[in-house]
Length: 260
Picture 1 (cartoon, rainbow, N blue to C red):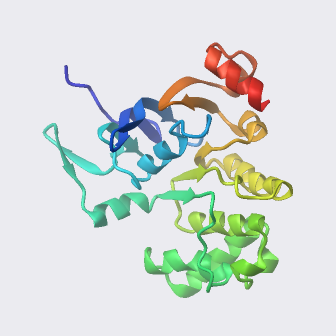
Picture 2 (cartoon, one colour):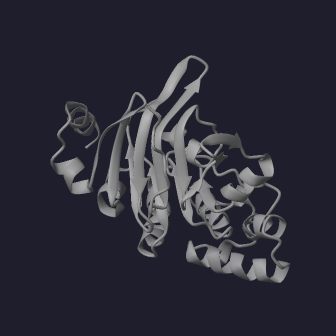
Picture 3 (cartoon, rainbow, N blue to C red):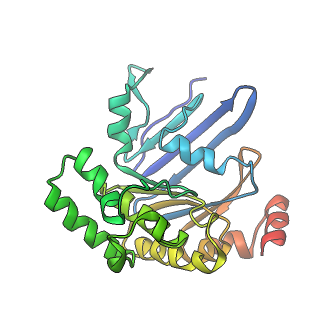
């Protein structure tokens, strides 16, 4: 029986997604939806497929089965009369431009200042006027608490400051969706809070976000939906209250007993 894949009214719709790396079945029929303006947090042990699903949403990885829709657009393919045709690199880049992604590692250009890092993509990808891009970059760096660091190079910034530059850089592309892949895991503990605070502010402003994290406090406080993944499947999903206070699956209870 053919599966009935279709776009939904959500910002993100992941429908029965499978992903293999050679013979390793990393995602085994993952499905979830993220409404516009909401925050979805994905928890789970290492190797559970959390980061892989983010990379599939942003088309850094191709999927072997299922569909992913972002803002009602089928990602990576065009569907013509029920047959899928792969998009070319330019079309994929256009889709990806509306999705901001922040990684564990900051990936800043070391030879550019914070300001130049944030200006780079709007000028070269969005073809923004340089003065306009600069003004917006200064505004965004102020928004993430770095107004006094705009002319500093990455090597002159702490890890937390570099990650906040990376967030500003992603926001400069005016994304509809922000993906965060363990954005605080490479930071010293005392720097984690400053990055999470920026993310909380974004959530309050209505940015749609999917966050892979080990920060249980953040997941509990900011999420609209929390998903627990293990071994390539979604074990349990629900509101923070449902998942943290009334988990139903033994695997969820076991995981939370170890991390809380």
